Length: 340
Image (tube, rainbow, N blue to C red; front, side, top):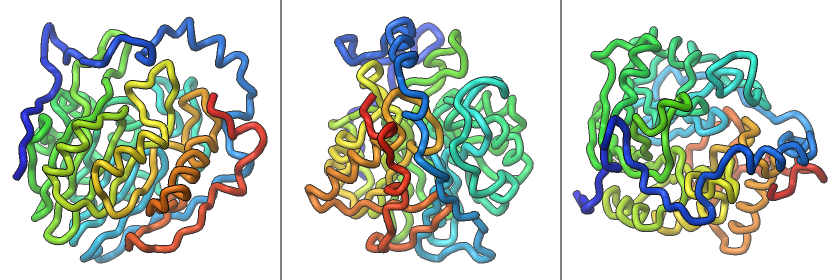
């Protein structure tokens, strides 16, 4: 197994020292971004109609091959050779520490957390509220399943009711097994924290899911990381599906989220057979229009004949060549196309 000379960010004074650059494009102050929000049209972050949702009903028998179901935002259920894995499930109403504030869901969840019974493991990329949702985790903690997360996220899960014996923490380039499926914790270019005072005290990650005949890459939440994606390709081998984040980007925080062009660059570096886009459509988390990530990815994919699959929320993907309609096209309008 290839192992590059890379490691997680350095731990110093109780937090991970984030090596994000400081030039233009790095995280900027709220005071700089807030006026742009005030000038933004109120419909920009919304779809031009109702987002279609396919109710997710777990198979009574787990798929022996590959079955990938998008739960919305960055959440997935992956059935891989008889093992059911749940990735970054966010089924709550708001990605927020409080119930009364924060961006509300733009579509209904395709399943309630209790409907994910039978999961062999829940895999979490980091501790942000749009990826680690307290409501969802509280319910899943009662389903007697295992939780796999980056270093430092374990105590968060414990506070939400997950038994310590069910938690596995991993550093970058460490791995664990769920049945015969190898779970590799891999780099991402991001940050962490569930409060203003708790920044970067836990690690963030992407993952490789490797079975006997299938490999899936889950991008989690990341800015562009060309060198790391090259290492990940060598670590995992021939990837079948790359689940790539394409939304919630802005020049003010360019280093931590990919836009569609950068996601395509990552997809090319990973050398995967097919891309499933995620981290868009469910919540309004940036200044770009609701449809802009999809329109940008559509243009990139059509120009280069890239194999992009566009499942509806709750729709199951079982083949890299599966014909899937671009469900979001009727929801594009004059307000939600813009970059910011």
